Length: 177
Ligand code: HQG
Image 1 (tube, protein in one colour):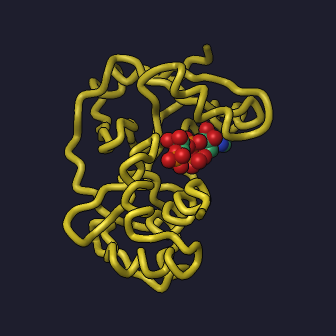
Image 2 (cartoon, rainbow, N blue to C red):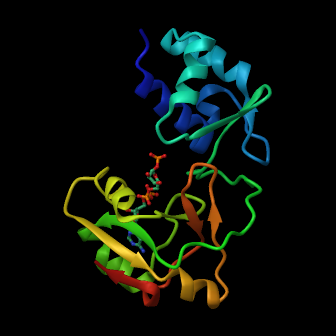
């Protein structure tokens, strides 16, 4: 049996960062050909189209969307794609889970998107902690004053899987919890 996590990670790699790894291309909105992706996954992992469809359907974070014969990642890209998300009004407070070692730089420059297209923010502390714990080291949760950011003209976007995205969070909107 193919390992679902391995396949899901490969799909994230291909659909967010490196479509050429699978000999694929993404259109300007991030869509790839589903059959072509399945063919690559079949030969690499031995998974059937039904296996792949159920990995997409049962993905705990709903990372992928299928539309007809196309598939895309719903957030997390480093390649330049336009997901067509409209600005949304965020809750008054959002959260960002990170590591203590990044704090000096974050408190100097604010939250920057690093290799991705956006800064990723969580709707609650619990989700932010899960994000922070992906990395080794001491976890830190930052509170983001999204209400004031909105008042000051910042835009926020809600991805299809519930992640809040913005371009930059200046240190003046951050409070360490
Ligand atoms: C940090 C996962 C130094 C930032 C998660 C983070 C999320 C800075 C790291 C999604 C900084 C970037 C994204 C600055 C930010 N100086 N460090 N000025 N500004 N950082 O992976 O938010 O499982 O690009 O705190 O669940 O950790 O892939 O972002 O630690 O939703 O679907 O730089 O990835 O989703 O790391 O995670 P990332 P993230 P998936």
